Length: 364
Image (cartoon, rainbow, N blue to C red; front, side, top):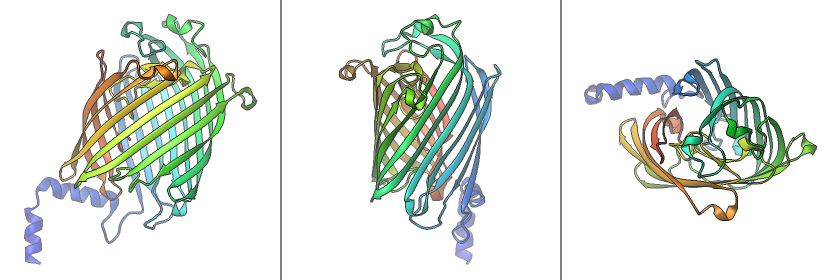
């Protein structure tokens, strides 16, 4: 007992404080919490919105407390800008008992402004123009475990963009920009997911591969007829201890009369970090990134990532011109039992593009 007490006293104050915090959040080994609640403030500054304040709340739970059923979550993001712009986004992912069903759903209402550079990977920085809009977006997916690690499911996608103000964006008013006065896109389709990751939040090893197809047509209430295919492949390999190599290949392909904001895009907090969300848009997009995730000390880790991507009007032009990005980030363990981290990333692209990100969980 004396030896144990002396060892506890010798533990650095910072680690003892972290241990106390973790016990508060997740309980201890004798009495672990069955649910976790994580609020994160949203603070951001963008030229087009000025200051943005909001709150992101996440509740993580299991429908069955065993060693098989994966954790589910419900999240709500709400933000308001200094320019009186508003966005709300509820989201959920649910795994039923023994992971037999995986259900994902999200809804977004946006009353915001953003920049538009035109279409194509060669759209110049000087073409940047501001426009505002309102939008409803919803996506529901439900998949059944048809065999070990393999899910097959159906999806419904809805997006309505309206009250577009392009008075300061003449480029957006051009007749070849589909949907520039507003649109309704309503579609349905199917998808297949192979997932043998050892953890859904911070995998040490495994593969996640998903292919989804959706068709949008007037019979479903869509104002435009087009088809969409998305492929997302993620591979994880433990190198040593908690040092992980993660690689992602993402591609999106469209055919038909595609509204400009539903075109394939590059730039967001998940892939092509360092670029403004939707900086490059076209019918097809391809991106690849690799990330080294390295444990540093105690609750802290670091990541180093790099990648490249492109957008093109046709599939055979996807190898013509690419935009690279590099970056690094800090990780702080938020819920060690579930391998959930707080993420702080900074990334740099070309042509003066850069961005910082703060969120819960990894980019991919």
